[in-house]
Amino acid sequence: MSGMAGHMGDISWASLKAGYVLELGSFTGEGSTKAIQEGLAYHHAPLHITVDWEDNLVANRPKVPWWHMVVGDTRERYALNRVQMITIESPGLIFVDTLHSYEQMQAELNLWQEVVNDETVWLFHDTHMYGVPNVEMVKAITEF
Image 1 (cartoon, rainbow, N blue to C red):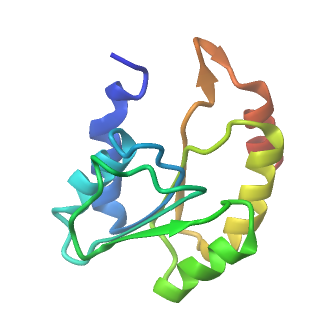
Image 2 (image 1 turned 90 degrees about the vertical axis):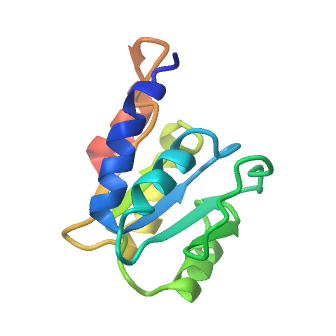
Image 3 (image 1 turned 30 degrees about the vertical axis):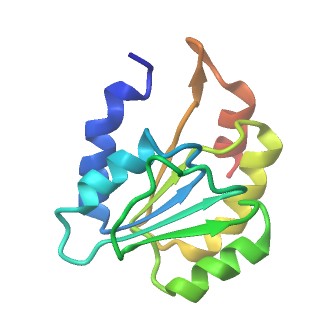
């Protein structure tokens, strides 16, 4: 079992409570994307937007009308603009699982803060990697 597998129930629960989840990074969709979908399936007005630099969700592509894929760099304004074309609402939850570097995290936090409100919860994957803290990623989050 991977470190992420133990948290899928928590991600589903948080998604249900959030209603609108903005997912930055999805890879193949068999982890967090699936957990987000499971939670949102029980929400009265779900919205799930996934942003990733390429669409790898072949086998795990959500088949619901409230899921949207934005292909783009999560550090670039055009990706944010495409999300805002789908909704102007603030997400209840932002789940971040992109590159795990200081530079990536800093750019994403500075950009995506424009769509959040005081109620938005940020969840970050891989703040610990292979049993040790991801110092650079945590540094960017702490500075933010």
